[in-house]
Image 1: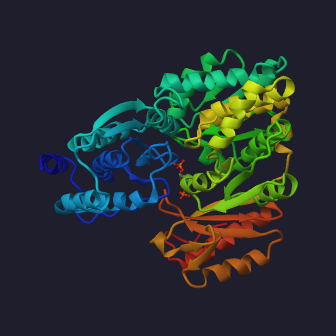
Image 2 (image 1 turned 180 degrees about the vertical axis):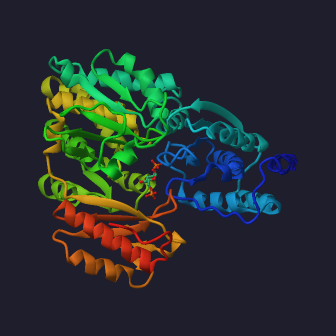
Image 3 (image 1 turned 90 degrees about the vertical axis):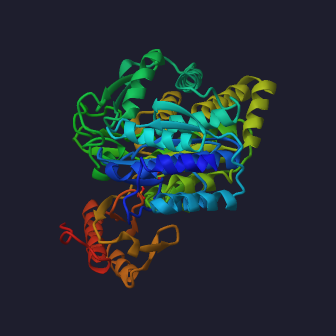
Length: 541
Ligand code: G16
């Protein structure tokens, strides 16, 4: 077949190093950029097949998000803007790991299994982050698409959520919005302006927000958006990629894990600040108090603020619909208790990875999902969206005002995936509407002190987990060791899991005091090191 000849020829330009094996991780393939050329070419092939299989446009984003600049990776986007379906993750892995002379066999096998008609058209949207390797790697993706005679549209530098949005817009024939960066800005800006229209005049101090752009694509895109906010939000942008290194001592992951402000931010006591990550799909907020103590408002606090706001609107609009918050094991115990006991909301726990949270959130009329690391969004059922539309048309007075607020919230939220820019605008709108300071938001509940650590082991796959990653089943004895350590700390909780984006085992611990949380995290790290094949020296306290 002519297409296969082309694949064969082009794949020689993107050869796979013999014996190299890569795993499809939490959000796609991710490793040092030097090992990814063949993977990118093959993901171009896969996207062209997936497009024919779904008769829709598919997205391929070249990014390693929060990882260091030297890494890169690829995220695949399904028709409605969601992450690639798990069955196809298996195909992606087989394709990425097929030795050169097996590539066509694997390709043919996928085509046969999925009954793909190669005469169908294929359409693929491609985007990339600002890493120095992203340009050549996105060329490799485009090569793969072309080799299978697919049509591609290269969006160039975009945030990951912007590309998710484009894919959804395209496959809903514009119902979700216009599939361009301009269309994205237009939709968000309009919803933000409508939401904040009746907010009483605020001082410049109240409108001021310090943003750490992680020296990445989020900073570039925010710089385009800010002048169009018409003074409703006064943004000071730091780590804006003009000089610093991507994600280096800045960005959402750094701030969340280190529990301190990014290097280079000029932050005074009480200033409201937030950090994006390297591809603009995560956000965390923070401030420091008069005593210089750092206060983090992570994904859990964001989920609480948003769900409180939406729940109130639903009640005021007289809409009795189900609403849930979806979290992972990283969610602070205080947040879960507050959401369940005080807010009386349904709370679900899933494995790490937005694909898991997204899936569960889809089961509710309103599914608010956030990972503690700041990755999250809100999903609205079609039934609810229709009810809101009806209410905006048929009601008047207070009910109409509330329905309009709900409608504009829906429009401001990027329902395809977590989106730092969209989440930031929603949070800012909510704070403005409720006349709330960042300190008042922080005071909704008090986080249990916690600590996250990383442990290097020779093969992190030896750690297997169950119960939404809250327990380990291997190696033998590890869970018993963790249980024994947790018992010694008041309000203690700890779990470990292999990262799906970095070559490390992640350790999480929380307890009544910071000293206790730090001690527990360290003790559990030692247990991991000893029982799971630690390398590079025992973790130090
Ligand atoms: C990705 C995923 C997130 C996940 C994070 C860390 O985020 O999209 O769902 O929380 O990786 O995953 P892990 O702990 O397995 O390394 P990002 O922002 O890096 O793409």
